[in-house]
Length: 149
Image (cartoon, rainbow, N blue to C red; front, top):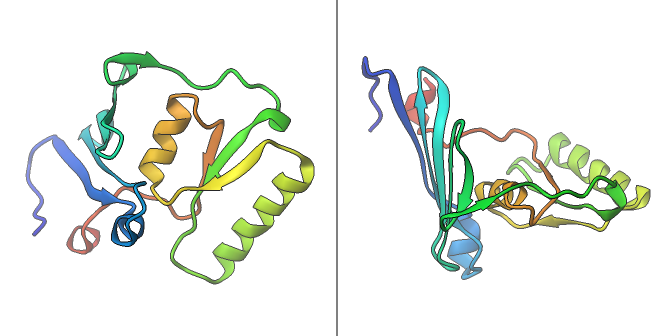
């Protein structure tokens, strides 16, 4: 159960990002943890147990993958970009808008678009240069329903 405290620190934890992948036996899922101080994210970690990869970042200190410094891709042309996206569970208007964007990217020319199913890993892949960019509608930190009220 979630309860608010007077602490200036808040842990944000998604114990299983990529739940549908995990439940289906698809090995694209992770655990993600972030620490916020006064509503500002100061550090985060994403662990992909299937690959033994730990992505970590601390504000002002850069990002690392298993203790090796990482950085975003140097690709500067959309035609060379590999993008990742996600679909919100709503199959209505937001999904249609996302599909239209994918269509525009593919027609306009780029290396490709992938939908992996674990947004935290998508973002880690952008940070490490494995993907050139990411977008998803209605993406927010994992928060329990009690915390939203």
